[in-house]
Amino acid sequence: MNELNSSQRAVVDYEGMHLLVIAGPGTGKTHTLIRRIEKMAGKLSQGQEILAITFTHKAAGEMRRRLTSRLTDIEKKIFVGTFHQFCLHVLRGYIEETTLPRDFQVATVEECEALIQHLWPQKTLKERRALQETISRWKALDDLTTPPEEVLIYNEKLRQIGRLDFDDLLLETLMLLRAKGHVQAQVHEIYPYIFVDEYQDINPVQQALLKSLAGSRGAITAIGDPNQAIYGFRGADVRSFERFEKDFQGAVTVTLSENYRSAPNLLLASSQVMAKAQSFPIAELTARIYIQGRLTIYEAATDRAEAEYVVHQIEKMVGGTSMYSHDSGRVAVDEQARHGFGDIAVLYRLNSQRPVLQKALERSGIPYHIACACSSVQDNTDQVCPYRGGEITLNAEKISLMTLHAAKGLEFPVVFIVGCEQNILPLNLEGLRSDVEEERRLFYVGMTRARECLYLLRAKRRRLYGKTYDHEMSAFVRDIEEELKEYATLKAYGKKQKSKDRQLSLFS
Image (cartoon, rainbow, N blue to C red):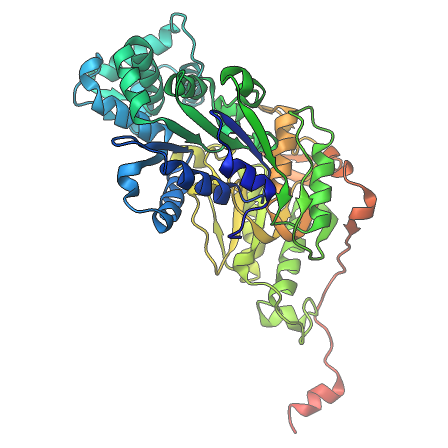
C-alpha cells in the first residue's frame, strides 16, 4: 500500500500543532506515520531532530528501517526509540543536572528481584512479586506525594549500588524536566516535532513526559487505537485518548477506518463485539479487501477434544502431516494444502491452556513454536505475558502458539482462539481477576489478527490448576450475530478399510 487514502492523506498533510490519529487494526498506521515523519523532517532547522517514540525495540527498528529507505542521514534527523531509550539518552546527556550516580547502570530484572529478596527475606515469592509490581505501578502514576515506605527503602538501596530500574528512567527524566527549566528549554529546541505510537498504552508518567516534552511550542502527533488498549494491568490508562484535546490545546483528531487486513465478515463480527463496549466512541472499520472470510464456532466436550479439533483443522489446511492423517480419513488423499504452518496462530488467554495444545500438536507431528518474549519470571507464573507481539520473532515453518496479549501487532491468514468461555474470556477465576472492558478489547485484538479464517472454540469441560470447570460460551461470542457464524462438528475418525481394488492394485 504505497498510495494514501483520504484519511491517511489528511494525517500526512496536517499543518497544525497537535494531532491525534485513531487507527484501527489493519488501517495502515505505520505507513501513515512514516509518511508524516518524512514530511515533517523537511521542516527541521539546523541542529533539530524529530523524536519518534515506539513501545518496543522491534517497532523502533522497523520504523528506522522504513525511514532509512526514504530519507538520508536519519541518524542526524530523527531519534527513534522507546520511552526508556529516549529517557536514558536524556539522563546521560544531562547527568550533571541530576543527583543520580554519575556512572549509573540500568538494573536487570534479575537484579531487581534479588534486591527485593535481600530487603524483605521474610516474604514469600508470591509476596515479593506483588511488592515488585506495587513499586512499579507507583512509579508509573506521576504521584507527587511522598512515596510509600517500600519505594523509599527500595530506591535507597538501588542508588547505593549505582542502579536505576526501568521505571526510574522515565520518572527521573520527568523530574529533571520539571525541576530544570533550562534543560527543558534545550530539549524543546532540539525536538520540535514529537511522534508517539500506540498512544492507548501510555501510563500517567509517560503522558506527563509527553506534556513536558511538547511544552508550549512543540507539536505532537499521537497515534493508536483505544479499542486495543489491553495493558491496564501494567498501569496504562486508555482515558489518555479522552484527555488528549485537553492536554494538548488546539488538537485535531483524525480517524483511519479503512481496513486492509481482514475479510468483511470477520471485520463485521469484531465490530459487533466492540459495539457493546463502554469505550471512547470511534468510527466503524470498513473492509477494503474483498475475500470471503470464514468464522467458525466449535464447542468441544473437553479441552483435549478442543485441542484435537485444532489439530484436525490444521491438518486439513496443510494437506496432512502424516500417513495417519490420510489413512484415518482425517484428510483426503487428494486434499490440497491451502496454507503453510507459518500462516496459522493458536491464541489463548492463559499460559496454562498451552500444554494440552502442545501435546496434541506433538502427537500429530505438527511443528510449532511458542511465540513469547517472556523472561523466566513470567514463564513461571500464569499471568499473561506482558510483552507485546512486536517483540516476537515468528517462524514461517511452524504454527505459532501465543497468548492474546502477545498477538498484539501481528496478523495471520488463520487464527484459532481457544477457551472462548465465561470466566476465561473474560477472565474471572480464583486469584485471577480482570477488568471486563479490557477483556473485551483483548478478545477484539485476537479476532482482528485474522485475515481469512477465524475459529472461536469452547470446551464444555476444562482442567485448570487441578480443578475441573464447566463454563458457558463466552458472552463476547454471543455478541456476534448468528448469521455470521458457522457452527462446526467433528466426526470420529478411525482406521478406514482399504477397498479390494486398492489392495489388489498394490500387487499389479
